[in-house]
Length: 441
Image (cartoon, rainbow, N blue to C red; front, side):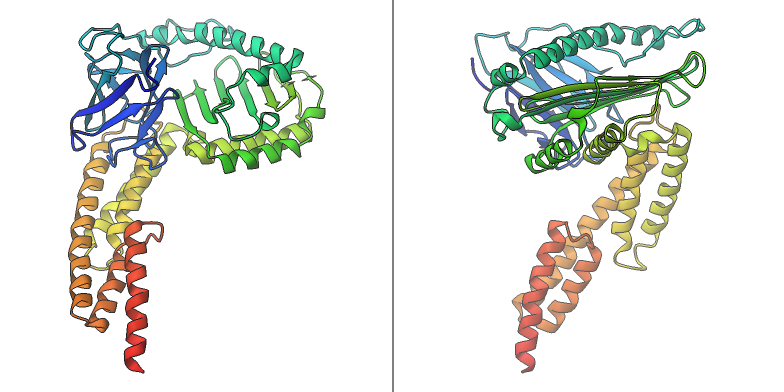
């Protein structure tokens, strides 16, 4: 079978014509430069979706994106796709091509199979009749049950023959030697008769970190994000686990709920080389070694996936986004006052989008954020090109004093030192200042 069975092709939008082969391990698409495919589209989430081969089929998985991923104009959590389907993300429309002629024909229609966001029902009390959305979302627990069975089977295998399990993993999935291969599954559940909060973090042998969050309180949010973790960060995580004392903990710690009909449970399974261990804490204080490692894992996942905002209510996030929009609009209106105001406006627009990433439905001022961001970004690019031209002209004329002045303005216009435009201007400025120094002597 062809190792790259599918190719995604941009058929409409600002990136029309771009093509990307889908490798066997899949690829992620989004606004972040850390995604396999990066589109600088403000209408995209940092991690928008993932194209995932499953056998001979290709699936698209939405990663809890702000504007959702559409297949044939219908929002999906995940869906089986074919060359006849139209996948819309932000301003971009994507179609897929199958590279293996022996597979499904290019135009053959496949059945979309959306999986709804998860709703967990622990049966604590009788509830009011569900809405249509809630009834649909009840499909997910069956999948979770299947996933739990799979975790149980894998966990049993790990405990009975961890070394044998590790040998079965592909040696190409990690640069670690087999004795350092890391797999983990962490789950936190806090529930009572009125609310359920579930947080799950997994790390697979390919180093792909996945987090799923379901909060059925007033926030009523469902988040799923994933990304491939850099090897250096995995090495650090492995060191933290090895020094945590986790493998010496008991398998279970059980107490009594502080209030009737409540549940607070943590469960962590770690397989590191030939060591495999599961520890579950139910309705009692955590052992210090468990708590320290658990907090490190939660912080690690939030930093990697940018999901700190989930800890706030939707109302709080909307208020923060509104404040950021106010700052952004003010800085944009004052762009003639100071060179750096345009960049500060763009930063504030990005902040507003970050706050609303997990909020659905979007507030009525969401489009104002998108439009403002695009206007500021276009204006900054226009000014950057003009300022760069002035600096290059002065350099070509060997007018080093004027060149230094224009380059300083350029650095102020693009103040982010991680930005390639700032780096280029800074390099030129150092060279120009050296020439100025020589000229004075």
